[in-house]
Amino acid sequence: MRCVERAADAYPEDPILALVAQASNETGSWVYIYDADHRIIFASDEIKVTYGPRATAAMPLGKYRFDQEWAQFYEEFGGASTDAVRQIFLKEGPYSLFELNGDKARLARLVAPMLRDLVDSLEPRERPAVTWSHGAARHGGLDIDNHWLDVRILDPNGCFVGVVSVHKPAPGMSHLATAAATANLGHLDRMRLVERPDRRPAAILMADLEASSPLARRLSTAQYFAFGRRLVRTADQCVIDEGGIVGRHAGDGVTAFFLAETYESESAAARSCIAASRALRDALPTVAARYEVPASDLTLRFGLHWGSTLYVGRILTIGRSEVTALGDEVNETARIEACATGGRSLASKSLVERLTASDAESLGIVPSRTTYTPLADLATATDKARRDAASIAVCDV
Image: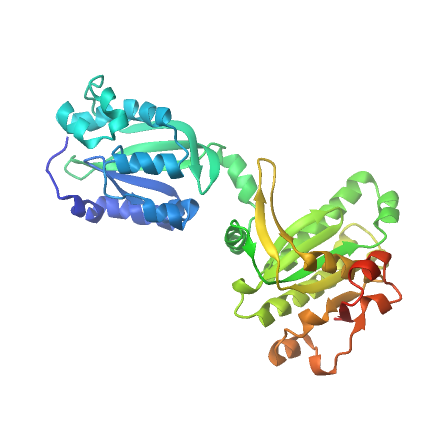
């Protein structure tokens, strides 16, 4: 039962719908709210973040959910074909027609032109207390198999005031919980920052385990796998604790980026890069003890560098999600790391000299008294380092 007609601008202020809207934002849910006239009057913050600023700005809130503006929005930002919108309207249109007291002419005036030929085939039907459905949708450029649950909302007098539409990806909560179990919310926010690839100055950390082959031969396959997994998890935790972004893993190798834009300064990003490398080195004995590996058998070499022209972005496919970067400085960091044999931590001059006096002091580094050695002059210099990065000056940190 719908009791009263209300002005469109009053619906977002309805106390019940307002409470639902607040709850959806507090719980980070994907939620739309339709008013009694089937206008979409609310989209939760999480929906807006998922769609991105451009789509959010184009979202025609306050308009009938099947009018021309929403049809264009579904097509441009939601990845919905004309046929898909028509199929949804065939299901939902009867509820709108019921609220319009069966006035098909009025409904035809409300809907987008591509839907008008369907109006005559509809018969009014009161919306059930709960309905659910699924279909493909696009959120923020991602094609997602989307499920949604629509719940009819009545006020204390039994008057129909609107519909809460709760959306979620198709995988069950057990799958989603598993994916999120070890997620760090701050890291997820930083990952979202790089969804759009761009030039991003950053400190780069690369680390790799030396002489891993003898260790792999000595341990059982299951034990070595467990050891490697623990080492990678520990490395990732050290990076995340310092506000960095975990990059790609290759074997025993670890890559991380400390974006200047996520810190208050380039110095802070450089400081965190060095601090993360030290934290990982300090954690090695604990990792070794867990798997009864002598600490002397574990040696990590570190290469730390500054990337002024890095092109950083996120690669997201059906099978993986990772952040990667392109640029000469990435290759130079790999050359620095390869030269850091014997468990050294080599940092480039361009990284160390970005430290302010206070950040350097916090690390026990005195930049004004630090001396550097070109990679080509190191006794441990590799052929690739001499070829690709001979003049890069480094020091131990």
